[in-house]
Length: 328
Image 1 (cartoon, helix red, strand yellow):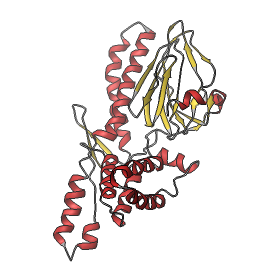
Image 2 (cartoon, one colour; image 1 turned 45 degrees about the vertical axis):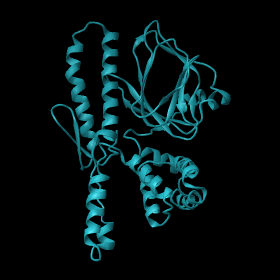
Image 3 (cartoon, rainbow, N blue to C red; image 1 turned 90 degrees about the horizontal axis):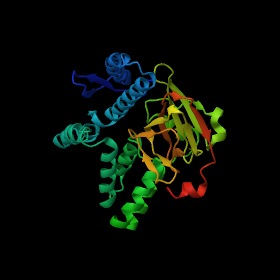
Image 4 (cartoon, rainbow, N blue to C red; image 1 turned 60 degrees about the horizontal axis):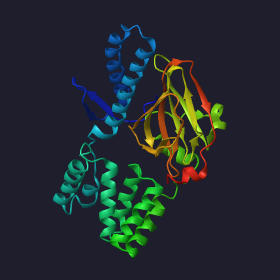
């Protein structure tokens, strides 16, 4: 896994993660996860039950992986550095500049352990649009919202929603600025590259070996081939795999953990379940199911194959557009 995050995660003895800045911080988080895994692995190795023993390993790694993903995005407190106040008003209004840079951004915006940057951007642009402020300050916060992960589809829906409460003319003015900010966010390689920046695992290569079992394009990146085999599977918007069943006479099945974006998992005869980063899905052997991306979002999950006896995958019919459309 490449070091896609530029944060240093310093580890306390009790396992809580504090966030400071450094390069390749995710490697430290990976090291800590591996250390925890090794500490419990010794006890498990004493059991003379290979399948049960391996399933226990997978469950431990799965829980730790979920913890790592959530920790890097939720628990970390990030210090925001802002100089706009001093740059523009430092001589004319030094106290205002200080409050803007050090308090508003240095303290309020930096409390990301209480509310993430993405949500703070959402609150801020909603407030500005509602007040009819569509000058350079809104442009700045729209750009920040984009950097904080709000997509082109989401900003269009956000402004549409705001329009019913704040007024139609305010929404028109906001859309004019939003179109400029998200002008380069289209589809294809640009969207794929933007999605890669959202997650710690690589997208990988086109999943050509299983392409006939997917609608749309998917990508596969092996993460580990030792002890507990796992891979990161990425789906472009609208991509999903066929209905399928993991067969086994004993044990078997699959576990998924959401990594980035938004997707769905559905078992036959049951409502679909939304998968977000950190969501864990347990799929028993013998259950007919499918999983894939939302129509308007890239999506990635880790896939863990649960060991068993006489295991195989039975690929079935595609998920029809009608079935898939009911989820949107």
